Length: 305
Image (cartoon, rainbow, N blue to C red; front, side, top):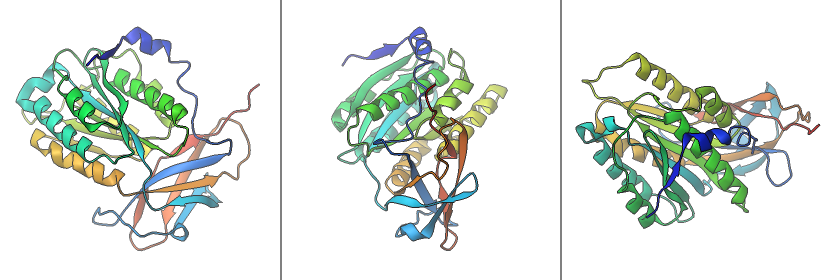
């Protein structure tokens, strides 16, 4: 199987073209939200109806026009850190096994790509629904080199944007599932560009940070933890931080379970200005102790000059 290797210079060349928002689909100004709802014990809440939700944009109540209580198919980018440190404590072996279990739980209409990153970002498998292809690609992941975390995230966000453009049905949700054991050390793409692109996408980001007890937190790792928490929170995902790599199968299954229990909500913004401004979204559930989680907001479209 051939691997596509993305050199940093090629990634940098796409900085100006890969940030266009893909918030609105089908020629209508519909803002689509993938929504996770949990109760006070962290369990997924099912059976909610459209009337149970309230959506506010910049404090203004919106009219929900689209509602699905069953998750749509999903396009996934699975990012796997293969830097040299992943060769310690069997982390890479355990990560490959856990990722294989995650792939096994993909739906028939789901597609995924597999990306590994160390000093370079490598596409081990392009978007496919063939689980065997993805499992075989996992075997190509070898540890070595440093950590280009931001390059990998930027690549995945850009690839998902292109995948969105090629999805004629425009029904697929999009998500990134990232596993890393350390801070970024070699990316040429700055964090601010990754955050900006994430905010201009509809991609839900999940991050798994693995730090072994004997390593202890470093200043760089603390920064990486802040970055992963911010990206996941603003996109409506979750961040997990573990010290024991044997927990990875459980974490991957938690993410798989969440993706299989999401609602989809859409509304047409009452703010008709096409001014390119950031609009904050607040979502409420009018039932018990249920708490919804979705992306923090979106950029309005801009009228071309």
